[in-house]
Each structure stands twice: as structure tokens, then as C-alpha cells.
Length: 165
Image 1 (cartoon, rainbow, N blue to C red):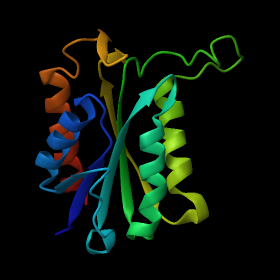
Image 2: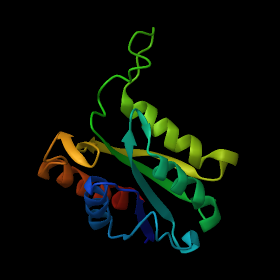
Image 3: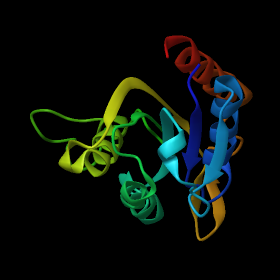
């Protein structure tokens, strides 16, 4: 049986809710970005953050970079995130020959940070869902996101990871 942990960075609580459901489905420990333990005892590390203006949040980027010092080398890693519009086309690519969705860019950014020097194995299993759009601390759009259905899918994602590994 594998030992797993879910780590997350959350501003308004949406990513935290998703992380809790993934951890529940996986039967894993869970910690926020301020309380990252030594990862040497874990086989699987599930990491998540939120998006801001078409890219990973600053706090999310910082905590992913810190994971190298916490023993993430050689681990299997699964990714998840929340965003105001993960299926939307990124504004910088909308007029290009190959428009790209926010979800593609977010996963690439997370993977690029984590795979510097090829230290981890990024699993193909990934999860994302809508979160609320916040500006100045107030919810501006997508109130009520993630939905109960999104949270059930997050739990199922955790269960599927457990089953696979």
C-alpha cells in the first residue's frame, strides 16, 4: 500500500476544499503550503494550487519550488488546480495559430517547476475545476464553485489514484 500526501495552496478556500476531497478519496495526509512535512516517507505527492491571471499563483509557484528541499526527488506526483475558467482559451494565445486553454498552460507551469533537473515523475492523472473569481478579496464570479459535483469528482480522482497505485 502506498503512502500519499496532498499539498495545496489556497487563497479563498476553494483549492483547500478540493484538496480535502482528493485526500479523502485517496486516504492520504493533507497539508497546506505553510506546513509542508518531510516528504521522504511518502510514495505519492499530490500538489495543487490556484490560478491568477492565466498563470499559477505566486504563492503556488513558491511552494512548488520549496518541495525540492522537502524530499520530493524520486516521487510520483499528481497535479490539480482551481481556476475561474480552466476551459477558457488563454488571452495571449487566442489569436494565435494554436490557441491554448488555461488548463493546459497551468499544468505545464506546475510541471516545469517540479521537473527541473528531472527530479520527479509527473503522473498523467490530473484534476481541475472551477473556483470562484476573486478581486480585492471579494467573489466576482463563479460563486458557489467548486460545486458539490466538482467535489465528488475530486474525491473520485483521489480514489482512482489509490486504485492505480
